[in-house]
Image (cartoon, rainbow, N blue to C red; front, side, top):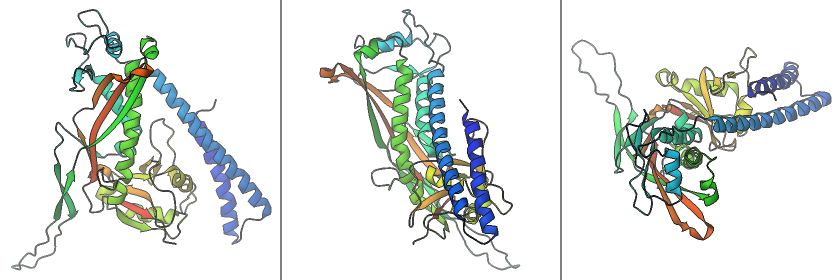
Length: 396
């Protein structure tokens, strides 16, 4: 089976063939003739098929990586039981908590919850927390950028200085007064909105010692919470939820069309962000916009999109990394479809660690054990001086 890199190279070749047809017609100042139109339609279909194969292969490789991840260390405690044994006993209701011998190996552990007896408070390895956050980040595009993540122990409102404009300097004549031109500041308020997920496991699954429960729950909870919070980090309106970066960004470029974007418009958006922000900037848009941008060329006939041949390394446009997120808008009238800028000005506030609790009673009639994962978070762009700018499609 071809690798993702091979499939991407094949798709790039097809895109090049399609672009050559268009360039030939444009050079002759004419439309595609019937034969060229038929060829273009065939190539376009092959590009769509190739894209679908890439998505399927990436999903397959992700599943392989999930299956191949190193298990969470299973160190024995003083009683001779491993953490996995104790975790299963907890899940079966045979014990209400798990105690950890900190001298057992080099595994560091942290408290993940302060729960009632009926909820079953317990401790888990730090690697479990790391794995959970790994999957959470995988589903949140903003967390994949250089966004600033703050962790606080308590959830009271948090005030962050918010820059709305920068002060300036001017040439001053000898003996003349220096005029004031101060930076303007406001305050960004970060709250602690609660997100939760229930995971239900059958008693049969819990009894099956061939299943790595810690890894399964970390993956499932992390991805669910990442999807829910990631949506609001991008498009949230700030009303009882995080304030999304799209709404807080400033206009960089207005496209000439409502359903297309050009090379020149992306270059204009790139240079609408000042150099100090540009050097740490990311591109963000969804897959349908990515498909259109992937076909764009510069004045030398080179594709703007620079494919990465290293797995896990993002592709680039004009030297800056590209991240896609399905929460970004499709091309439509007035839609904000492309973001570019330094996302370190977007602050994510996480409160403490995730709560992780268990109940035998919630789904007692179905013989299911229910695990509840809860996190508290908020997000807001605190630098509104132009750190992140957007491209808006035309009004008509």
